[in-house]
Length: 356
Ligand code: SF4
Picture 1 (cartoon, rainbow, N blue to C red):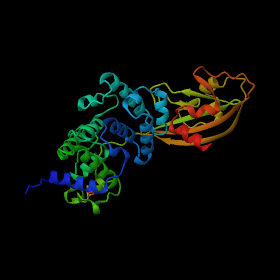
Picture 2 (cartoon, rainbow, N blue to C red):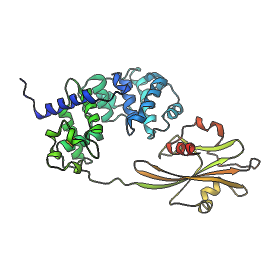
Picture 3 (cartoon, rainbow, N blue to C red):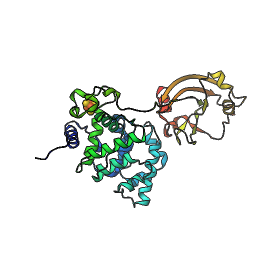
Picture 4 (cartoon, protein in one colour):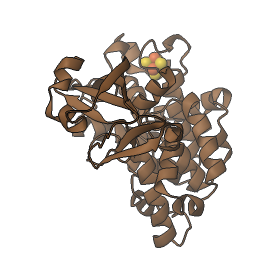
């Protein structure tokens, strides 16, 4: 009988667990690299429940690389609206064009070619290579970091070069040579369902017998990290201006969050500011020159949390007299209020629109 090493036994326990508990997700029924790629990009930093509908909508509208490559970026962003991290959508679109032009419209099968696509990092390239082409590349995402750092009680902080190297090598040593895609999906599912960030289900864990962190009763101390995330506070003041049947929006162009999305005219301040303080800023005076009569209908405050930014926001709904000669700065676009839904906006603006 073949003698199993600890590594091969861990792998086969993971596969058996997966076989019994895997989630029935729409993208799991396919080995089409385009669909695997689409699902992986949608699911980055997104919960499965939320990503599911987006995936189905994307597949319906863009069933293949060509249809995605030929779409207008604005349509891609609109379909992406609400998922956040819009760079993913822009990269997805750019990579589809790359496949069309550099690979004659056929999804590349070699790991290095996959890695050359815009927005595709080692994680996504490994996921596509292993699932769609059965190549033995181990994925290393947040789940894998957590599971392996606990399983092997890795003391080196996982956010250092040394820690990343240790985890990547361990992941690679565990990969199943024949079913690499299944192994990768198994360890990720295991991390999100059993070896969870808080209150992992150690009592029912099939890997408990091998788990060093469990053995030394220090599960909660792993993974070890070296630093805390610094959250930057920002203060946004939006003006939802109504003039007759019109409203006003602007497109974000700078290299900042939400590039190419639309929003109401914005005055960003360095701290919280009330309406009186706002009205004394140069930006406000530029937006509403003297002589324009405004009435503030109501205001809403919304706090929006991004990975590295906490955005404290106040939306002011203001009315400008329909007959007045209101000429906002040239970057502000005047549109019919009823057409607002045609423009891709951030999740923050969407939250406000839902509120009103
Ligand atoms: S025993 Fe607990 S900490 Fe160890 S792998 Fe299982 S769930 Fe994770």
